[in-house]
Length: 231
Length: 225
Image (tube, rainbow over all chains, first blue to last red; front, top):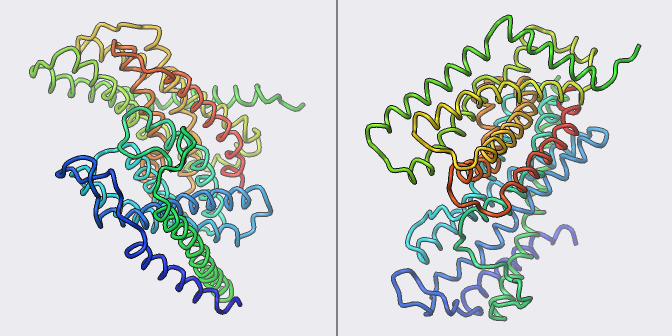
């Protein structure tokens, strides 16, 4: 079963891509900035089936990195947990950049500019800078154990500051982003076929993250073992 | 005799001030940097003659930018100096990590407060702003300065153990300090006469409390090898 899991994942993601283009309808009630309001967003709206899951996976990766770092610091300083956190940060950055780029494309279509200094965009940008700084910190410390300890402390600090970035900062300005899918009115306001594809895509991307994470972590484990053997 | 936590923190605070008064490093660089940059900015803007509303919107940004750069320029020294003079080990033996953190943070806060005491009135005078709510301005400077001092103390301890310390400090500090600076700017702007946005004071207090607790809990892991 384990040997076939990646193939199942590929098949699932392929199905999501096909469904995003041929099963889900285009978004209604949205329209581009240069079009009459309340129209059909057209094929451009299909980018959301990939933008939202990638943003979600990036968020998941950063939280997971924080939790692994916390366990590293609170536990017996197991280097494997540190490497798991590092792998999660790397993947979180990849998915975060992809989410930002797809979001910018959608923003260009909807609001007329790639970058609007929308609070959500700003928060994500700062989060990406934070984790880029995490990698810079690791690179700046020569001793592996010291680097792991300092980076873990920094990642945990990120975990506690993040709520301010995502919940306080956006309230200082206005946002162009819609309410969460399940909003204060307690109603899901997405067409049901779109929602099905969105949920299937989010599930697929989550599985993709865990698969890529296990690959990267194993690579880091191997590199660490080779380093130990060469000393 | 075992020294108490408060006594240890106070001793660290007193030691840092004694070193500072001997070398006058922070006073010379931070004070001069703050005053110079403020004068340059005011001079560049003065003849342009921007109106009062624009000055009220702009002055808080200028004040907090100066405080941020003053922090980045001077405060990482708190720990870098200990590593360079090889006194870090002695410090590890003589004070518990949380007391050391409290002492260092208190020292950083007192330095920043001194810089603020010069920069804020000078900015108001040079940019010709009548401070609408002086009490709120003092509160904004105190809360913002406290958060800046505590967060930068933890980051300075991290940076002191790496290479390329000044640039690394800027890279690490910026994302952590953005929420603090945004809140402090908004509160300062309210103190200078802009409309007060609800909840900002509470959020700033919450940020300070969060970084203080996180600092006290994370510092032992950062400090002890």
